[in-house]
Image (cartoon, rainbow, N blue to C red; front, side):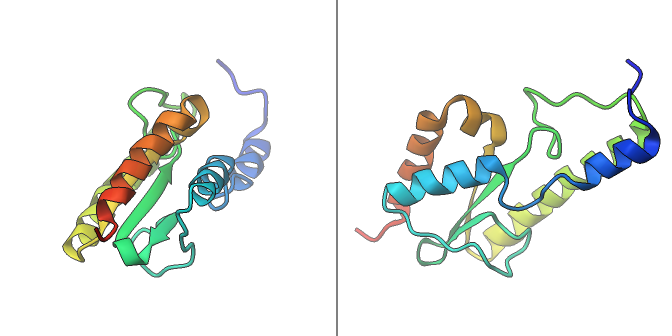
Length: 138
């Protein structure tokens, strides 16, 4: 399929994609907050987790299906495929490295796909609440 936008127009559109406070992140944060799970956003941890629970030593990343190569939804772009393959592979490799670094620092790393939040929020929240509850002091 041929892109209907010029290269400059497509570049401009892609540059406007947010990296923080995306709709899936906000939906997830509001749901967890409503259930009594208070979190922190600002941090200097590897990978800059989207949600941090310092007292539980647990972090949550909300991964976009395109940017992190979701096995269920990712489709490689046809235009500039080599560029995108390198970019997305780099993201996936960086995710693995950050997971390893955080685990070495004693953190529990939870990852959620954007489609999980969009398509099955209750199940997603249930899984996260279970994992977070297991970290709370008994």
